[in-house]
Amino acid sequence: MTREKAINELLDEIGDDLVISSTGRISRELFELRLKRNESTDDFYMMGSMGCALGIGLGVALNTNKQVWVLSGDGALLMKLGSLATVAKLNPKNLHIVILNNNGHDSTGGQKTAFEEVRDFVEKFCLIIDVEEGTRLNLGRPTITPEQIKDNFMKKILSQEDNMIRKFSWLFIAFFLITALLSCQRSGLSPNVGKPASPISLKNFDGNTVTLESLKGKVVIINFWGGT
Image (cartoon, rainbow, N blue to C red; front, side, top):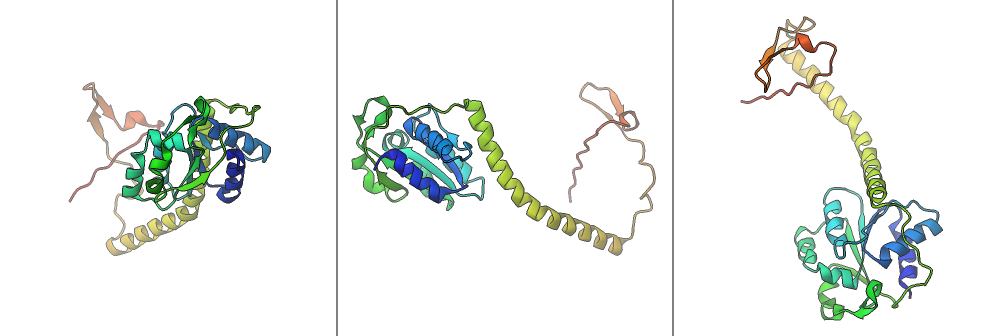
């Protein structure tokens, strides 16, 4: 099976999950497959940093409830093999690591790797798919900039997280209001409710006095600290 065909089949299972792809031809093939399938190119194409896809994927998985997929080659994994120790220690259940193994450094001339020496160890944490060497001659490159890759990926994460936030925001607001009402019923409203705030003046970092009245009509952020 070619690597490109393997990635295409994986995309059927991945669906709308988050994808971080390794440097080189894996990212190039993934990008062109997204275009061919009329799908969004909002994956994180790790162009130019060999072996770093796994570490990035781990960090993303630890900070989202979404399923996260890392697509890496055998050569790239060997560059950062120690990352698997961190994966084993933290063991995020939403992280899926796929190694597309052709036993060679395909992007730099097909030099053989020593992947088979560590295959048994890698299989404890990763799905290994053996693929053919080489790629098609007319394979292109991502037509978006690294900054666009970053922005597209962040928008995908934030849009998915926003959906979760919306589900719980009204519950939080309702809980806050009910708690406030119950507190007022127990203690009674303060006699100062509805009255103008008392004059407040503080020294700023330059030693000048700033009054609350002087900030009228401006956006003011007040940070209240409390202790017991």
